[in-house]
Amino acid sequence: MAHRSDEALWAIARSTMNRDALALSDVLRDRKEQGSLTPENQPWLARLTQDADALAVRKAHAYALLKRRGHQMRTLGELPVSTL
Image 1: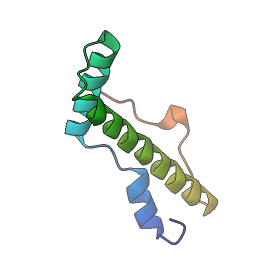
Image 2: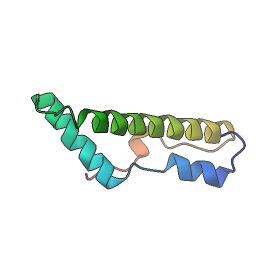
Image 3: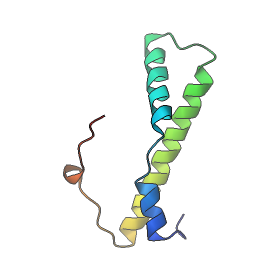
């Protein structure tokens, strides 16, 4: 990823999980916590969790590269509050 342009890294850093995938992941996690996740849905939850983890790693890597290149990162207090 280090060979990518700053613009490409910013796009990765600001990327989000698909809303439908996020909603499905929430539903499946809730079902798992309630003990009602079916065996058929377990692979879906595992895949969605893996995808979310991979996205988080890509975003963190992009932010780290941007910071190393001298870009300013906002502090936690400067980030917008989510309305989800």
